[in-house]
Structure formats: C-alpha cells, structure tokens
Length: 243
Length: 243
Image 1 (cartoon, rainbow over the protein chains, first blue to last red):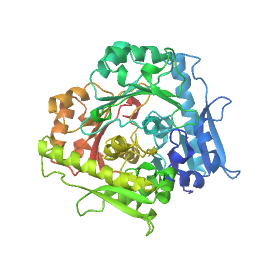
Image 2 (cartoon, rainbow over the protein chains, first blue to last red):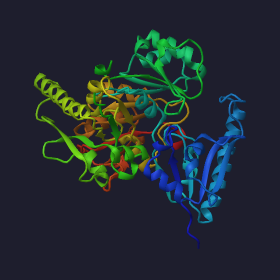
Image 3 (cartoon, helix red, strand yellow):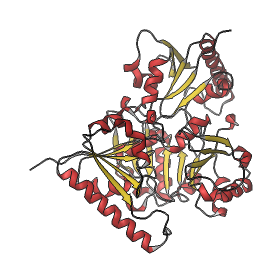
Image 4 (cartoon, chains in turn green, brown):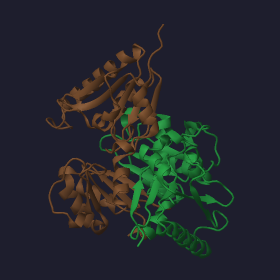
C-alpha cells in the first residue's frame, strides 16, 4: 500500500511576496503539486504572490470557479454549482494525494480566515495527513502598512462584512472599540453612512490594495464618495491613545 | 547632519520560528539594534523566537517592565509607572535612531494587534522613518494548528478579552457568528459559564501554547474546570459547514 501525500493549506499573505512565512516558502518549495483557486482565464492572486518559487518540476493544479458574480450568491443555482465545484476540486486534489504527492493549496491571506481553502479542508482533512500554515491576513497587512495601532489592552475587535444591512452595521459599529470592515466594494456608500450614524466616521481609515505596489491609504472622510475596488477595507482603530 | 536610523516594528509570530515572515527575517538580520520587551530577569518571548538570527554584531536593547502583575492595572500607581516606562523606552530607542542605527523592535504575534510595540510607535513614528512588519497573530497560529475554519462568507468575528464582565461576554457571544476569546488564564471559569449561557460551549475549542512544542488543543467541554496558563485562548468557529 502506498503512503498518501500531505495536504498543506498555505497562507500566501496579503500580496507582498516577502510577507510569506519561512514555513510557507519551504512548503511551496517542497510540495510536488501546487493547487490554487482562480477565476476562469486568470492566473490567481495566490499564484502571482509565489511565482518566484515555482519551476518546471511543479505540477500546477488550477481550480477555476465555474461562477463568480454572474449569479447572485443567494440563488439556489449558485449554491449547487459552487458545491459541485468544491466537490470536484477536492476529488482532483485527493487523486494527487492518493498518488503519494504532496499538494500545497495556495490561499491569499490566512487559509482558515475567509479563505476558499476551507472548502477543501473540510472535505479532505479527515482522510489525509494535513497541515495548515497560517498567513498574514489582508487586514493585518493593511493596518501595518497604514501604521494604525488597531487594538490594545481590553479592546474588542469586530470584523464585519460590508454586505450586512445598514442598521445592523451601524449597531455593531456603535458597540465595539475597534472594527475592520471587509467586502467593501460597492458597499462603501452604505458603510460610510453607518460609520457617520455611529459617530465613527472621523476615525475611519480606508485602505485600497494594502501591501501591493499601488496601495492607497487615506482617512475615509477625505475620500470621494462612491464605490471602491474589490481589494479595499476600512479600519476603525480602537486604541484611545492612537487617536 | 547625520541621517537617523529606521524604526522597525517586527512581528515575530506566535512561537514557531518558521512562522516569521521572510521580511521579518531580513529586518532582524539587517538592523544594528534589536529591542524587545521582557519581564525583569527574563529573556523575552519575542527574543527567544528569533534567537537563531542574532549574533555578536547586534546591540541588544532589552526593555524591562517595571511592574507586571504586582499592582492592579486600574491602580493609578500602575498607570504612572508604566507610562514613565514607555517614555523612557522610547527615549532609549530614539537615542539609537539619532545615532543612525536602525532598531528592530521585536513583537510577539502582530505588532499593532495588542502588542507593546504600539507604545513606542505612537511616541516615535512621527519623528523617524518607520516601518511595521506584520506577524502571524496568536489566534491565527491557534486556529491553524487546530485546523479550525474560523470564518467564511459573511460571518462576523468578535475578538473578546476574557477580562470583560460575565454578562457582557455572554451578550457578545450570543451576538456573533465566530469568536476568539483572549486573556483566558484565571478568567476561564467565567468564560466557560458565559459560553454555556449563550449556547456556544459545545462548539468552543481551547488551545494552550498554540504553535509551541507543548501545545494542547481540546474541546473546552472536555477540559477539566479551573484556571488556564497565560498562553491560552478559546476559539468559537463561525462557519456552519465546519461544525
């Protein structure tokens, strides 16, 4: 009986290749197969971050989403297509593991923190030797880039998706010391109103493409109204001394 | 006029030296001065993590806390002693920067996420060239070690200090998809009661010394009652599919 390969969820961090951990670099250098999620026809952000570590010896296993924004996420058709996709992706990774090959699954940021890797993990980690290598999250990359002390002492931090209803967002912003608002994009006008209503707009910092070459950091109140690109988030610092 | 040195807040991650980022390793190798906070007579946890990168060329600048648990944190005497200490520490670091020497300040986990480095940052970053290198936080190290998908999709994550009042902790645990409870230690019995009252005890996972050699991971409900050591936290996963 052959030994199976190792499944490794590898956090690639927020964008700067030097924000990979030493452990992640070794895992990518050692694994025979590099798997990554990507939009059809794209290279994938995780793969772009580790490009300098890849060579012709590696087997690349791209996992292309069948749908991204074409169907609403609440739609049953979306749910069934995406579930089938994760099942097929897990089967493709399992086939490599069964052949004794280790598979590093690239995950932007931190694999178990809003990462697609989780869909493979829950399907495979009970059947194969598995390791998860944490990564620097986008929020951590952004507050470090902006030099914003986010929490200290007994501060509560709330990580909030910008997709939530405006009243709910306002309530939560009024009930926390610090906040990170993710999934900003077209939700930015709503987020701005919720921040204003909760009295937190003056403190809020907007970061676009944090840690990437063309990053933008500004007080949200200084930014023009309107939508934001996908790679953006809003930070509300908690620590009083930092204000 | 001499050029001043660079202030670098360096995240050393949660304990495993391989969880340093490539950027952190380079910063430590390059800086002339390595500063770190520690208890009197101790080496400091951050320094222990990077020990393999230090050599006789480096100037070590230990910053010893004048008090830790001898005085209550709410006491005015604590506040004045600790403020004076951070002022003196910033002055000691500034003296090196004025001499043109770069100073890497070691910070366990992530520097701007509950880290002591923040007290130097707010005193010095407006006067000297400064960079913050994010690190893997303890919570990220723990959920990765335990293989627990913590948040997905539109989940809210609440990071809660275990020091808060029991009723408040219970309220917040009832009002979030995922939670990380920090500062566990002697607060563990209270935390257990708050989890039980909010109906979240069955999901809660206890991690002790996450990513260190002698780490312990167990369902909190399987752990004996009683206090916990300093390096411990409780994870409440949000993602439904992970349960």
